[in-house]
Length: 321
Image 1 (cartoon, rainbow, N blue to C red):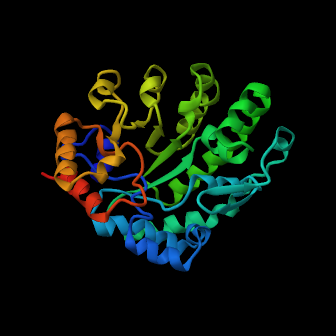
Image 2 (image 1 turned 90 degrees about the vertical axis):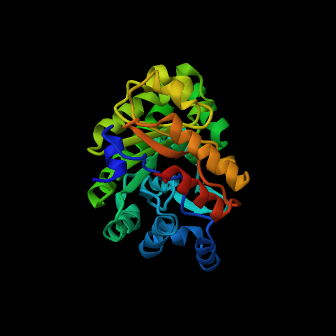
């Protein structure tokens, strides 16, 4: 068994496993060299390239898990939408209430992503984490106006908005199931923008879909959302690991839930001098010492202008025995 798999069962008796969101990406010189040759979409949808990038941080940093190099927005293709990337995903045309019934469900569009998993798993000695976006966050990319547009739609056309979220969750469940079948050991659900919602709308437009998605896939699930600490009364009932941002003190959360916890250092710590990075990493380790259901890492992703040596310093300190 691996440290990650054991921790996801709350059965880890060794040091905590370590992996980082966006651990493969623009801060790595090897990645930047590929990016000079290929578009982002080509990297996502060429299985051999996506596999190579997925392995980069495992080989370079010796992290305890790989996470598939992809993007949550790829589900837009399976819904029959056009998707491209510049600094971020761009969907064309945007979904409107009248178009929701005509969205497709074509998982073959995501075959290259699944093939990347199949190519990667035999090359790994650590587990592979697959992932997808939660319906609300994906909706912010599919509708005009982004986050504000999704919130307006939720107020103006709540029935239609729920219909959109249903379509997204159904295709996302099928996508996660395929990732599991291809070899993913765990699946992370990203709801990066759920924190903008009121409590009422969170319970209407997020929580039911978490339950639905977690229940539908036979694999350990990890839920990441900004502001999770503000919704522990609801989230602590979910049968999944909870990935926390840096605004939620781990020990405070641990007193409120027995769930597996993941995180949660501020990513901007990686701009600090290396001795401070090491100190804060060791403090995190010490605070959760002996916790069998703890996965160490950041409260969000590695940023493009962070140095490889800073990331290495963090990982080495978190893995220190």
